[in-house]
Length: 341
Image (cartoon, rainbow, N blue to C red; front, side, top):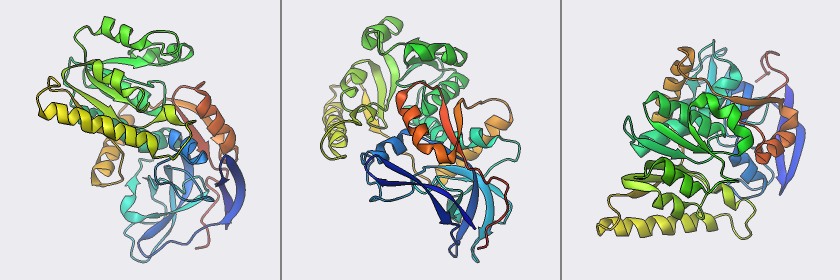
């Protein structure tokens, strides 16, 4: 059975094309996608700026939710089960082949767009908070709180009794009011001055996806014993030079601060790097997040639901920063039956 897939065929080149449904490997499954997410990772891949991305052409797509329609002979999963996966690439297609060890079962009563918003973004948010080790009553600064990760970070932190300060453009503030965070307009305000006014003794953690130019300021905003976590380099998308140059800068800052910490010169402050991995901890965290949604304790914010074929427009919309929450792509053949694998 043929279906639609989205391919990056070159720098800034996005193609909609037809492709036959794959056949599963011995321990693989084929998923008919219900929903797949748009993230900054795909924005970077389109520009050739994502760490260790495949060579062009390739099918992007970090995560998906859907129904198993074919299984390999050694797989323990069954046709008809609803699952989520984070293959990192390949998910922007109507049918996707995934290793069975990477799957997490999805409750039947969760909306597909909300479910896929938890795969990359939700697990990232949960694990960032765990790595920051911020206790109840303490304060965390979330840069980019209006995005898919940021909105979930704010909800999870609030549920843990943590005070949240977040940066976002002013036009997003009304939509973010439901999160209960204290918001700073990073375009019009002096972020550092506002944070110091709100938290004179410093914040206990800063979660920073912006990159090397932001990290020194984030470091200076930490309270003694606080933690800075870097998990991206969003502000270097348009930089010239190799993709790895910003990450080299981040690593140099990390090494320098770690040496100072070992010498007792950072008042216990530390910096960490974070990158989400589809391991056993990931699968356990995702299952926990699904349980929170089914119980009503967590609600992903969906910015837009768009057809898979409109992926290029979705990328532009994501990059514009006009939407709050996650943009989700919906394949058109949902519920159309199993491929002949």
